[in-house]
Amino acid sequence: MLIRGVSWDQTGPSLSFSADPGYPGDGGTAVPPSLPSSLPLTAGRWLRFAVHEGPRCCVGSFAVHGPSDSVHSPCPLLATAQRGYQCGLCFARDDFRFMHDFHRSGVAPAGLRSYLGQPHWLYIATFADGATKVGTASQRSRFSRLAEQGAVVAQYVALADDGRIVRQLEDLVTDQLGLTQQIRSTAKSAALLNPLPVAELAAVNDSHGRAVREALRDVGLAGFCSVNEGWERPRVASGLAEPEREAAQRRHAYPSAPGGLGLSGEHGLLIKSVLGHYLLAGIAGLETDFVVDLGQLKGRRITLGTYRSAAPAVQNALF
Image (cartoon, rainbow, N blue to C red; front, side):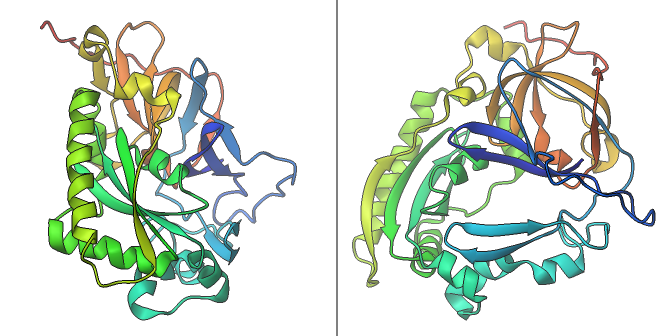
């Protein structure tokens, strides 16, 4: 299977994939239409897989037909990823590529215009080390966007009539208050090795939320209203977000391949908690817990099977 990432909905997190149509140059193989396209990441379940060697592959493209209707298409060339997780052809065909600049350019296909025409939320998200960002979510992805981001504490601060207005608000918050719109995945993962107390993170988030609502009070822009509404973190994320002290001391980063290749080789992971695309997982034979970044699998081919993780040398904290 070719991994497309970790996705969330109200039922929980899943590892999304496309059935592997074959390697480049082999002509491909037929894919039964009944195959599933995601694997639930359920606490207590083992995730066992082997990562195929080779470069990261293109994950395909999306066509957007309306506010809640988008269709994924695998890469027709089975190409190597060139721009992030896409080849040049799939990047050019992907309707979502217009979304990030639509509020300035006004250019977007009809389906994406319909998607952006629905109400959008402005949120403030705080992560395990207190780093905080401003972001946006459509009405459709109101819950899942924050779940996929890996937020520990978050709140909605504004509801806009459409995606154009909410992106204008997002830029305004960044310009006036200095809140970033992006936090690196590596920083989020490192923060989960020693997360701050949730009460402290909530105080940080509340402070930023008040500042944003104050800044929005005098904005000369129609089409939105300020809100003060908390986001409920999924229960399955509690083990990562709110560890007991002794459990936190037994937590380590899961080993990755050298050279920035991410996860490689064979793995057997007992899922204990999921936050964003990060797992808290155990491996056979060790009492240590590991923080695993499944985002490293995006664009990689894997095979499920009876695989085991090699036990790394670790030393738990003494104090």
